[in-house]
Length: 266
Image (cartoon, rainbow, N blue to C red; front, side, top):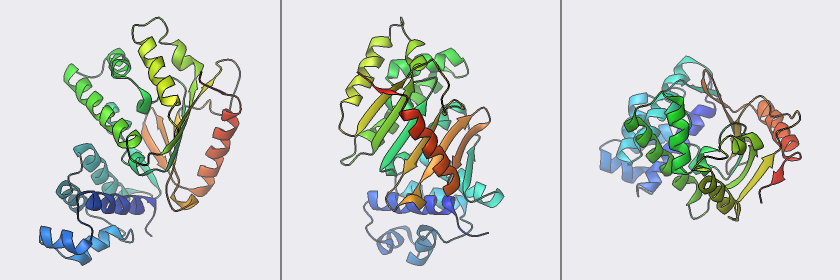
């Protein structure tokens, strides 16, 4: 088994959090933690076929990463041992599925949402109402999820050089909340975000067939070219990451065709 997307993903994640923690070199981190630069380097190179989940988690905790990032990183390290290094499936709790550690590192994100307002652009009231409607979480779990969602929004949109976002929302995702107390505030949030220089929000009419009818998805691009692109899709059995170039290209065509049928939010 050769190193694949998940190894590169975890390697980039470890490197990013090390630098954020103030350790500009592997030697500095190794000296602080009582290990060697070669051990840290083996994880950051992306060439280590099997990363130890406990080591991945230990390093991220030392670097001050939040627990949801650590939990998903450890799960990915386990997945590498069990399946394809280019595919990731998350079977965690539903409130956890939408929290993705890749987003803060992306240079551009294309999003299609057919039922809900996309998580990055939700107000707290909208997020609470949607989770209460599902009836699967306690009040405490909902509040924790909302805190994490706000943190996720900040980490993506409030950087000094934030990712470029193109968001296609189905008209249904707006109509379904019409008449609710949260409607005007959520619509104002979408319009305010649409005014940001790095965000474009489009509305797809409800009538008619279109190529994105299979459900919500995201396409994330990173510095380094096409080989660093990844697609993300959620379904009844959990969340699915795909890094195969052929599948990424196919989904890019789907997004582009859908975009031609949508209109910019006003």
